[in-house]
Image (tube, rainbow, N blue to C red; front, side, top):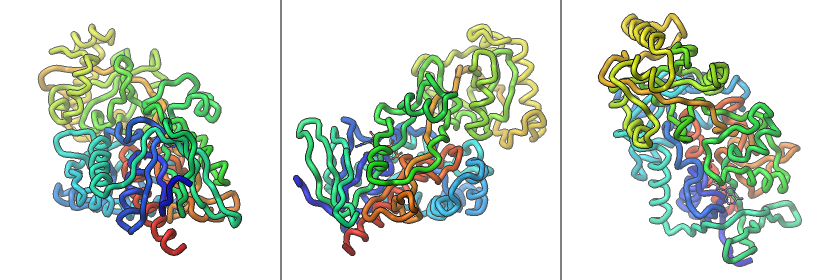
Length: 449
Ligand code: ADP
């Protein structure tokens, strides 16, 4: 072997960085590898936030939440197909993970709402910075501070085992160095999902053939193959999530927080058709039933002011605006008269405090301030719920449900946490909690060995 360490981490998203930092802090030597030339994976694109219950940040805002409620929302969102033991880890560690990130320098003080949540529990930086970029920056800075060996352009190829079946290292391929192996007691797979690999996606769910994806180029799922070759069992690979609101003109994902903060969804006929903050699977299916399989996010200046991220979409030049809904309708070929009636009706529902049309649970503000805006959206492949089977210590299991000694998994590469459908804000929570857990477990396994 070229190098010898306690723990090798594969993948530099939120799960990989959390695992690297926590393994280091438990006394392990660590090498982190990433196949792409840049760090951050899909995690750095995350725009929503980090779900957590019973946090100081919620208390400071007078939000009442509980572990039971977060569990209930997560299970319901996942159509009760989640592994309850993994959900329990996600929920019970969520506050601790927010505190851990905060202690390392993150700002998660703003708390908003994402689809499927009964209360505001999506933690994000105040001032509207993208949560994923922020979290990755903080984790990266902490990895640098700890002098962790990070290698870009380096792909994990094969888990190496000794005669007794224990992990003894990882075969990698560096872009410049070529093939070599790293001797290690433990390997943590944090290789993310496969939403960018439409061949794999459409084989598992033919309805998604040809769909665009919100993901970064590295989200191809080769970590799944690496794990499978090492004997890992898979679970729930067929559950693939389309994010309901990908900008048709901009090709970028428009965060759910736009709806959470008050935007409505209308079709080309100018009518609402769904509870805007239902779960992603339901919102995406509803949009695909509309004319042209697209819909429009409609909002005003009060929503715009409430969420800095909106200015980024406007900056891309893909958000037409006008001082009346009729004019806005003309710009986007939406029925302007119907749109005007729809917004007036919606505003009266906001005043009454109850959405008797679509049962939307939060009605944060009326849409009647300044200019109106429209973003045309359509669903894009966003998250792959399934993956390698893990237990509550992030150990990867084989087909007989036996632990593969020394092999750990965390983040989107794993299955079970989100069941059939992941709630917005639960991915960042998942990757920090399970990444950190995998790092700690791998470090203590290495020490015992
Ligand atoms: P998570 O959100 O679970 O942390 P991300 O998608 O953010 O997952 O990050 C996963 C990272 O792993 C991506 O940067 C991806 O390029 C990288 N990756 C995927 N497969 C490999 C591999 N075989 N070797 C090294 N890095 C990989």
